[in-house]
Image 1 (spheres, rainbow, N blue to C red):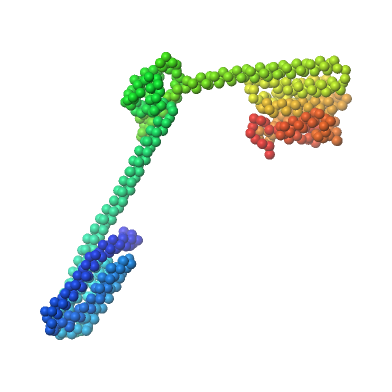
Image 2: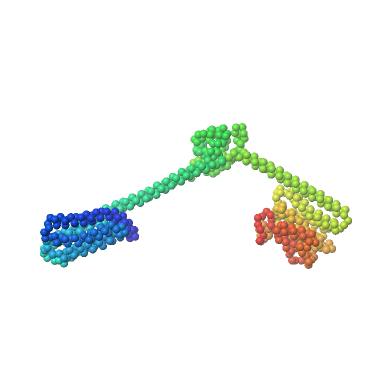
Length: 559
């Protein structure tokens, strides 16, 4: 045991030993005081003229020290320092022993009892006081030395050296015997203390283990209760089987379903699952065996004929482990008949909806084609060039809308269409309709899908800008190039950049999107605002319009 642990052990021992010894010390000291008084009362009463009376009265000097010890052990606040206080009091009592011996005449009657009195004081201190063993040894040696020096100072050894030596040996013997008595008592108390300490520690450990066990039992009971409550509250039909296919547990949903289906609904635990559900296929039992052997869950779906009614049941087999071994399998039945019927109904409705949408787009396309035909007839029969130009612009705008419905009619997805294919077809139609082959159309587009909501304004913008390029960029019907490109925006994900440019004469100096006299540019501005697109004119030879817009199929915003 190291120094620190030894110090803590001694401190704990004193805290245990001294308080328990206080009643014994108090009784012993009070009894000494009573015997002391009783002796003087009897001696005075029986021998009033005794010559030893005066000398014997001197022994009363020990009385204040005994009384001080009684007071010290009775004060509660001193108990923390009781070992030190009692040690000091008893060390001071050695001064009384020394004073009695020094101021006594060895020829005085009663002096021969002096060594006996000292021996009784020493043996009494060793027996009555439960102090540290080293403190008791210090007190005993101090008292012995006080006696020895006292008899040396009063020269009593000169009277009879043999008697002096005998008395000194007697006092030393009483000191030695007292010390060994204290030593034996200390050993016994330390042994009891160690045993009691171990008992307390073991009791504390046992109590903690019992608390942990009680907590574990309570947690287990709570867990079991929650487990059963959870199973009972599951709307699916649940049963647990062992490797012999005996039912271990069923939940309320399964009992209710059994009752409604006319199957045995009581005393299910312990039955074989084949007796409870005779309609189950042989493949079901093979699947459960597979779960037992592999430890992997299985999900199957089969049709069963129960009471003349065809029912679709989904069966999930879940392994339950113990010590890394599958000991049980939880089988969860779910009647998905209505769910399957609803899925089939939704599928049929979706197919019908697609057919209807396809038919609608087809009819809209045909109706727009009729409108285009009517406009073409009107253009051919109208002698006014300006009116024909306006009607031709209207025709191209309607044609750009009709092409969207044609794309959707041909597509399998009615929510979006391939923008690159649409713009390429639209640009080709415009160039073929407005030129005699002198304009070279160059197209560079990345394949991408776009929502219907964005496709129509993009088509109209393309129609207006390509039409204007053909009409105004090349005066005198000279040759030229019109480029239409579609790229992904490199700075913002989900955005596209549409560029329409030509190598013509460029825009006039007073050009403005706010000029309402130009219907085409006004339409481009409105449609760009509708798309929340960024419309820019790039400064370069010819004319270049750049429109940056968000693809409606992405959930991003432009920075």
